[in-house]
Length: 199
View 1 (tube, rainbow, N blue to C red):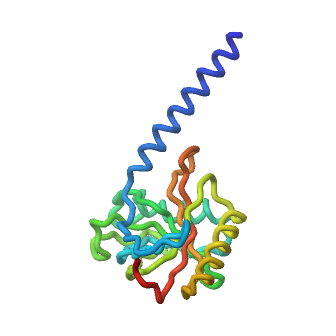
View 2 (view 1 turned 135 degrees about the horizontal axis):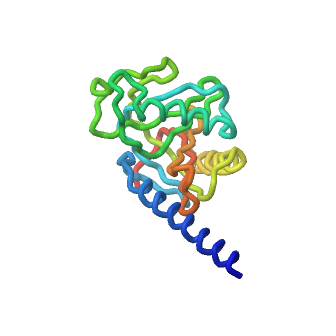
View 3 (view 1 turned 180 degrees about the vertical axis):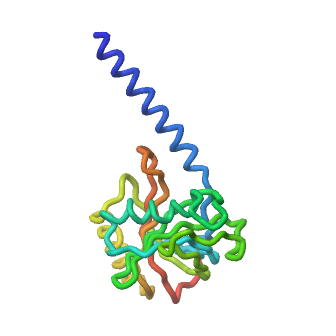
């Protein structure tokens, strides 16, 4: 009986710690986009220009790249740069799922311009400016997988085609959560769009 009690207490403590860290991570900075149109559960958002720390990936699949790409870019914000400067984590982590140029990016905090940021210590990380974009975005919960990204991405493509909205570029995956988050996980699939009129 005592063993069961200790297991219950231990599990509750672990869950409590995970929830605490999840709450702290949920309060980090995110880009301030504007929703200009809704199509069922799809949002059309205007994003401002962003400064990214980016690394190239060997393939455009989520499975197998999520950890390697994350660690490479995370090393930059954890001090792997010319000033050994720590830079605050933001959300989402962005994965460009292009067939020819897959990449993973961290959005730099809004207080930084490109010229303010230290140079990466490795050639595997590049600081880039992304101009303002209009993106169609659909959200899903739980832990991400390639199967889920494909399913929601296909639904996004089909819905936009039916709405006669033109897409350009490749599919994007946005991940908002730390690896230890077990509840309230937020993931999104997005693609750039044109010829959208505001509601």
